[in-house]
Every structure is written in C-alpha cells, then in structure tokens.
Amino acid sequence: MTIPEIIKKYREQQGLSQQAFADALVHIPGGDLTKQSVSYWENGTQNPGYYFLLVITLLYDDWRRDMALECLAVLKPELYAQETLDA
Image 1 (tube, rainbow, N blue to C red):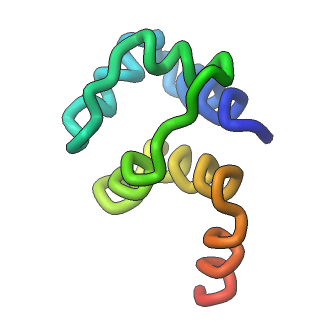
Image 2: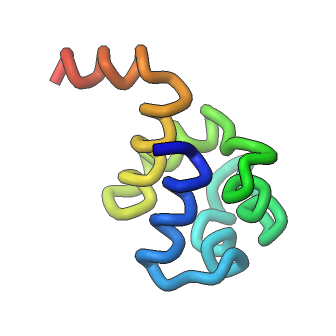
C-alpha cells in the first residue's frame, strides 16, 4: 500500500473531511496541518515527515497510531522490520 492510499484509507474510515483529518492531528508539535497538507499526502505530492509520524506513535493508541505505523512501514521498511523482530 502507498502513503496516499494509507492516508485516504484512515481518513475515510473515520468519516473525516481533509480539514477534519488535519484538525485531528493539528495539536501535534510541528503539526501545523491544513487541508492542503492532507491533499498533498493523498495525491502523493508530499509525504508526512518521519518526526511527525514518530510523535503520533508516541502520543496515541488509536487509529492515528495505526496510520503512522503503516506510513513508517512504507517510508522506512528496515526500521519497521527491526521493530517487528524486537517485539
């Protein structure tokens, strides 16, 4: 699965517009998200940053964490494989 597919999947599963999705993540440090940011992620123009995704995994134990882990597995598969081995 690609980053755009992952982002859209989680946004749609939660029944959120792009703006509401951005709002659900906006209070994360460095997370000045807009509807445009989410649109860029969904069309593949940009990817969420590693720091941003890592912070999500530390702050949440819900759909946001699951989404971040799926994105990290695509962006840095070697790290995800190591985490799985260490578990």
